[in-house]
Image 1: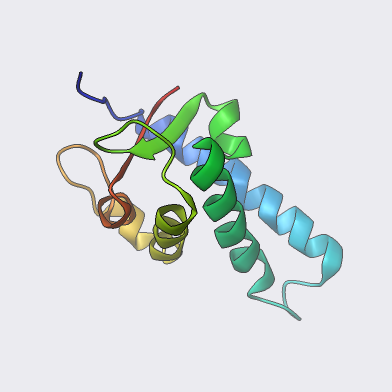
Image 2 (image 1 turned 90 degrees about the vertical axis):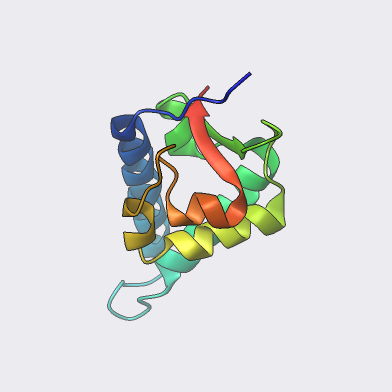
Length: 116
């Protein structure tokens, strides 16, 4: 069975929800101008843990998509999810896609975002 990628609109919506939630949580502890790396750091931790164990973040759950291993269809595990999150931080890596609509961050981690 071939895994089909999730639509780009759902993936973008999920990313937007995840990023806004990280900004809100980080903003509760410090101003973004005082601690500019707090929100991106939180984003990496959230992605590493939630994708690693559950294959979904809050945004992905709301948009009914999940990130799984390309060959296994299972959650990535924390190390691969952490790699995916770090590579995705510049965001340009998410825009460079292959024919399977996988960004550089997905190729690095061996993952694909599919409809849940």
